[in-house]
Length: 136
Image (cartoon, rainbow, N blue to C red; front, top):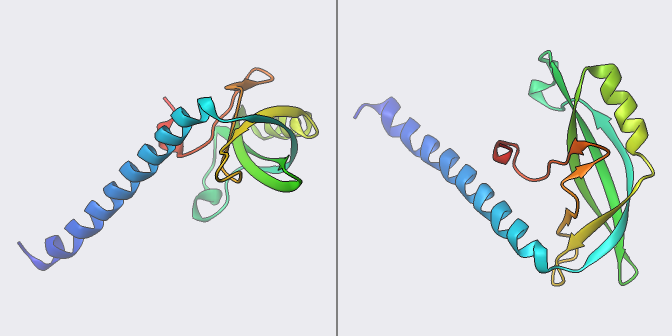
């Protein structure tokens, strides 16, 4: 093995391990959430597009990132999800339509900050939470 392979192999293995762990954790939590209590939440603000280094790339489908808030035993918690839209104008209109809507979420009794949306679709759009590579 040359030096590049010795350095690259652990980096690749760590990256793959991260993807597997994140997917497994999401899957187990999602499965367990079927037995969690539910509470009403309110969709708040969000943003259209991507942030970070990939934000400069042109997009055909736009992500509408939205936040929601809910209360458990008087304590406020927040969660996030996103939906896909076709084009910037459609995404901005969709963002406006979501803000202020009430939704149901399931939350973990032991860790109320962990939650999942109850519905898989809202206003005809598929809800996406968790690692983005898990959407099939």
